[in-house]
Figure (spheres, rainbow, N blue to C red):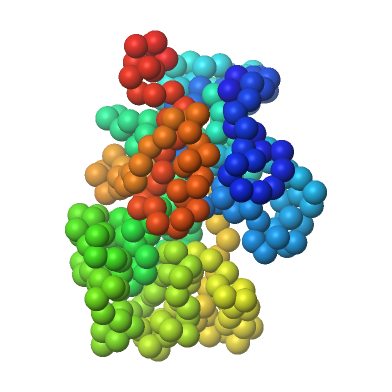
Length: 330
């Protein structure tokens, strides 16, 4: 099968399109013929760890533990291992593979009880590869304890995590203020944001409002800059460790003192979350925001683009182009 392999750390140019052995499903596993996947900030972070030493301690000191990246996937069940009862051959499925990656390839094996479910009707493969950003976003929202009536400000609401956070916060009944650049104002309005702020035109920290929660969805601001936006019992979180890893230190101090002003939750993968996300998609409360799409053969270009940190929503890799999968009956 075709796969994009990274046997060493470095720029996206170290990636190689190769023929590798096709995996075989073990007991309790399904083999997915991957139609679509994504290139995300996480993939880029594994390829080029930062800071290098700590990153390599976690992901392989001398060479990467994971040589085929890709968390999000959507495709069809091509084979099942023994004792599989939850999926049938030919079913359209989607999910994510945060434990061993592997979606940047023609085939991927997944535990049937893992983070994989059948796709919602009417959703294309390229529209279903949305789990990772939503997974992070929902982790922050659940840690906040967000519910109807709460006010949340989402900074950087146009990325994969931000667009997911806007939609999921609305599904919980929260009042959402989205902070984005001028070109994204209409987008976040269409996702349900109650108020939008153009950070290129005004200082979002000086708007004279306070919030129950502030989420930095892109890791480009700080608690100290945003604290005036928080109510006395308000909570801040970020999708990044922050300058000099200050967010992890602030979260630790907040936990020790019991103030809980800064939280930095770690996401845990589960089938329950993917089922929940599927439900939101079926209810019309969640949709993919796609910046651009690439064929698998051009994945290096996709990595280079994601590394610019300018993407809107997700960057899709079509492992099998839509027209090809239709004509080939795949």
